[in-house]
Length: 111
Image (cartoon, rainbow, N blue to C red; front, top):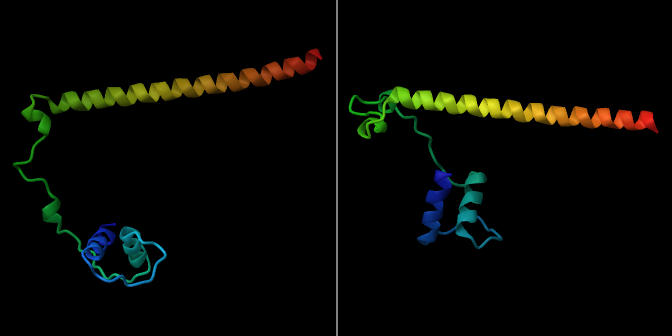
């Protein structure tokens, strides 16, 4: 995506397209060029040390007076609540389907 975006900027600044396209939209043209391999690019891996968190980095909540453990606890509570809600919803769906099947069987026996 980044390659197509940069190519689209080049096209918007006046570069000539590398293919003929039905589309007049230069962003779409750039995407087509990338998909067809007409735009050269290189993927550069970041060195691992650049990805490490430095000692100066901190949880932004600390600046607001929020404890990390409190946040973790709230997340766990929310996940448990969501799981319980999904479980209840699934149980309700199963009950409804079973109830429908049972009532159909009873209806057939009555007829």
